[in-house]
Image 1 (tube, rainbow, N blue to C red):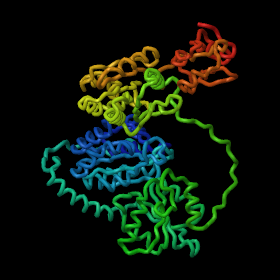
Image 2 (image 1 turned 90 degrees about the vertical axis):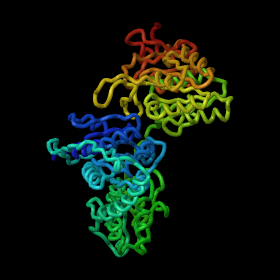
Image 3 (image 1 turned 45 degrees about the vertical axis):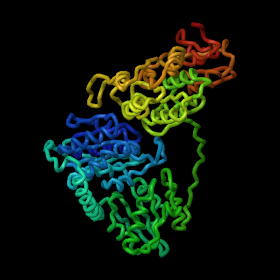
Image 4 (image 1 turned 30 degrees about the vertical axis):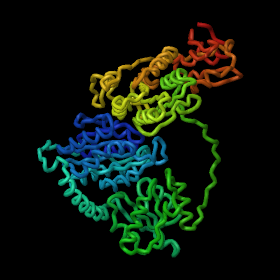
Length: 622
């Protein structure tokens, strides 16, 4: 064993490697992405790793490997679990041979997601056992336990992380590589009575699952991760009848708050499903009130209320249902302290804190030089004065909704923009309907929408924003990039060929940085009947070397602010009535220079033209 300073996601990945995982697949999604990336980075060659085309595909690939006796892990964020739910629900009924851990990173806040959905509820819904670590160390340790439980009971197992566990750092104890478990998959053994899901088999297995989960409730009651902390309980008579119940990162906050305010009795719930009933009964005995601390939904709270009813206990359970805990968003140590102060009636002694200056306001905005800005602007210019809807999607380009672009009218979930554009068009044929989708999302979830549009004779324009990467989650490869997470160079899957294979006859390619050509292309394609597509092709600024920054010829600039008001690039601002370019942000994309009606924004002509000095003096002409 040795210590390493690790992010929680890195700890999860190393825990899987130490447990002898044979295959890891998933789809990138914050806050889960670093798990698979760490496995790929630390892979000694014994583990197969892939970014799958989406979470459903990942779940099915993992299921096949688990049928063969391999230990597998599937990674995703909570939104991806919705995509993976179809095979997951069925795999739970069929069962697995090798251990199968489904790592789902929930996003309380939400910080980078559409919703705050709570995987602990999905565990109950799908009847899949769930582990809920409270720290990076516990996440590491739980991986081995999750694989062992999965194999023993032949079931998938959830490992539910949250943002602060996934992205927090800690110094943790990890195994040396020579201590890693070595798993030897038996291979797939044909057995149609086991691996083919028919109604009779499902009915029989459903009964087995219910019985198994009843057994697991008892097993989890004895599990070391579900603990009662009685030390210092009952500082005075008033506090001896009160307790706290918490799980996940909220347990860490509860422990810190409890140490500062009192020595209240505390129940730690590390396996929210199946709920550890007997451990809960042991905790509740003799308590009048219990405060539940948990992020998102009242899972522990509901579990304790159920236990009180089942066992005839009179303990009052407080939490989200009673208004004693926030019903949305993240918890924090400070929120936990406030909750406990109200619960115990003990006023917290606040230490004087130095007042800090306010943080700068940083609204979400497309990066300087982002090709999506140019693509949106070209469509906006081309469709000016016409009745249109611009259906957006999930990715960097969702930020196209911000002013001054204002080019995202709807955003629901990955791939949904195509269906929304079709629905609006069927109800209002006079509206020009556009659906925007990124290259990675196109492969992940947009293709069925394209086929649906062609089959049902929709009239819409699909705009594929191809920046050659999965940009928002950290530039992961996808089928269109030509390489895999195993380091293989492969043939790129052509978006054009896929679209034509779906039945499109009008598919245009254009560089969005060639503004006038892009505008003309949009005008031409939008007026074609039926389903047609424009593929805007330009790489993400984060994966290519930028050009030299542009500069402003102040003698030509009239301060009209057109460059700023039209595209909202963060590299542009005003100073002393003139436009100014921040050379530290400018990538030299030239979009602003094509917009400027006074030809005041120019490419650098020498080493000084992009400098602040040159902008003050007007620089030199090209």
